[in-house]
Length: 101
Image: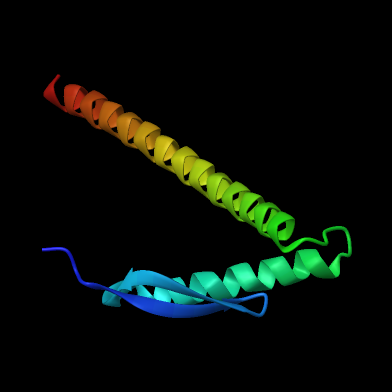
């Protein structure tokens, strides 16, 4: 059964938004909103972006770019781990063959 969603109030750039969110995800949503608010304020302070909408889009693009970079790094580590496991299996097999001779 899906957890019941309740409205959570978050404040981003001085504006309050109510977002539906399951009880068990409230802390994560609040943390995400605080992070987004911080990123948008950094962008706004740079003076290059004036409109709230444009600031939100640029912040979202920056955050998604970071997320994808982290995802790519995790995939590389997973691929390396798979290759190391395969190499380990080959070494085990070769050593077993040597013992059986």
